[in-house]
Image (cartoon, rainbow, N blue to C red):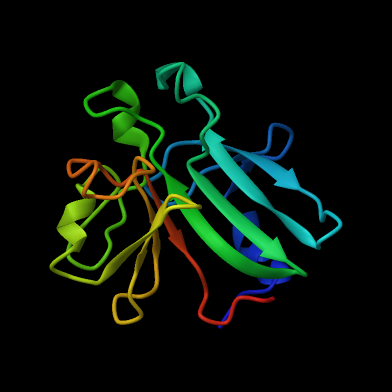
Length: 166
């Protein structure tokens, strides 16, 4: 099942707090600035939300969005949350706090997924993929297999609808 661009737009409108500056605030979230992408030649468009007060973000991590929603042909292709903080820095309090099954969050060790799901690493894309029982979620770590970097943390979580448009 996937959501239409029209539905996503109507839901986002409920969280608009400053139209002139494209500022949004979801429940229990910091203020976010929206950057909209119009459809390209492949029909891909989307929304990218970044922390409005980016002064708390380390210079090496500036530009990493908090939330991305990508659409293809007016239907949601994926939703992704990113960790734009280093452990212990002031931006950490503003990252997405939602939990995956098993209580895992952005910043948790990738290896903690192993008792919960089969975890495959794609060397080319540098993503981990969970199995269908867990939800077929893409997990971003440090871009290396766990055998090489066993202590890597979850830096991004990407949810793909089960019937994402082709």
